[in-house]
Image (tube, helix red, strand yellow):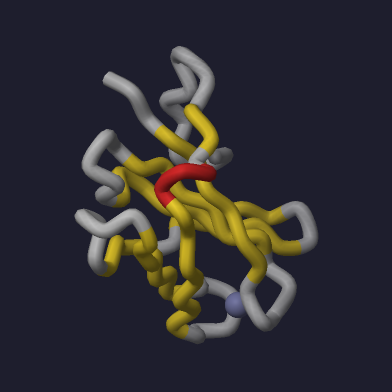
Length: 87
Ligand SMILES: [Zn+2]
């Protein structure tokens, strides 16, 4: 199955990452700050659209961070990248 990785920054400078499936639904999310990685609940908003959003609940600052992504600019995840903690 083709998968994609996305990443962004939270207001608190944590790096937010997620794996998306072919339908651009979030399979797993994570946040990294100061070398510490935590799972971060994440979900897609309007995944059927070319322009969609992903919201993360940042485990470090508690913000609900929403970022926009363009379906055409998604990066395919490497084969065998099963570790959702380090997207
Ligand atoms: Zn944060």
